[in-house]
Length: 498
Image (cartoon, rainbow, N blue to C red; front, side):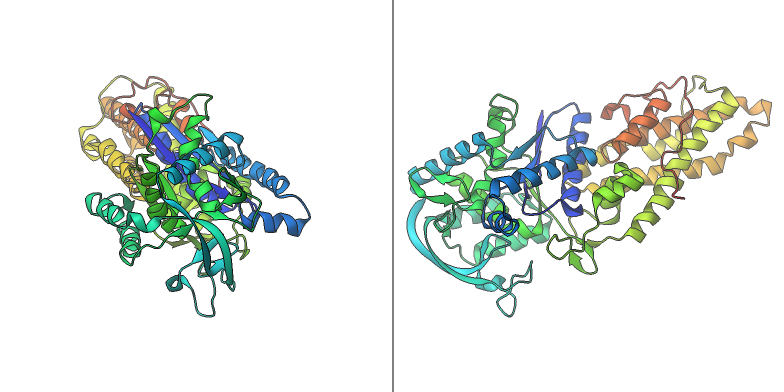
């Protein structure tokens, strides 16, 4: 089995923020979970480096676009390991191999009869690098995302015959109800298709910063078509060999809702035009909101992931963004809600559970667990847990999967209070009962930790090492499957802030 997941490639006209970290963390959770299932996984992220916004930002700084792209691409590259992302490749659209791949695919689209010359006139947002349809424009001719006034532009272009795929796209959506999720985004994309598709510019004539059009060197490809093809081109060179046959098509493209139209409509049409297989799923997550606005470089209301990680660690950030906001919906985030989650759930519920369990085994059994089966009463609470978590992650329901796991963290804390090992330890005739309780707590803690590994990998590995059970495979996430014999002390997993 294989699994291929992608993030959008991030635009390099400014530095990374929490919104970028959010999508990468989500993709990483999926990638790690599928590795636990012993699947061959490819996880792709990277940077989108062409187009007018990058050129404009570079010129404003008095540097060449390539210099700005190089500078900011490194910042995005640095973000991935900081947040614990296990991506297999980081693509840059200025990679020579990517540019050559774009030229090959789009030349094929032209050869297949889906490209023609024309003149385009319309309302354009330079920050989106996108022409806006009349229905998308806010009052005052403003961009609904960036809130800036749009410009009226006219330009000679080559066009992509998007309209030729009206019927095929409607059929795609009719036959594959899970092609786009959540359902609200599926309905949004289908509504756009049913409103009637118009041909769209494929190239830019006024711009020089982009991938050159092989049949007309005076044009560069419109940045969005160059960018969309990264998911396909990366496989041809990421590991020094062509992996396209092994991993294409992608199982999941994770995107934000602001780029829905490009991924849910332009992208499948482009693949159809190039006679390439379509992705299996496009999952559209919402925005992380502060004071009612999307996280935005241009608006400046940015919660810096690097600062959060410096103070609380990457695992705390990973947990928070997928715990606080249901994946697929908009949701508010704040430093106050972050610290509350950290204190009540990570430090108190999981951290204290781990500390108490290990300390009691150390105190009452000299760090060794006698061989005995876990408590059947607790076992019932863990029955089919791995199957439920897997099914939810298969549907990109990452917050619901985390909630399933966290219910067992809370169940284990209740189990401690219900069985009071400190009382059992004072009664010699109840040694066997104490053995069973300690075994059940250690096994339960191990099982939830294995399932939490995609979300909080560094913490999970540290805790499993203390439990003497480093196996991360999904098969190990079952009560009684760990064979724990000896445990050791672990420092607080989530130290409380001073």
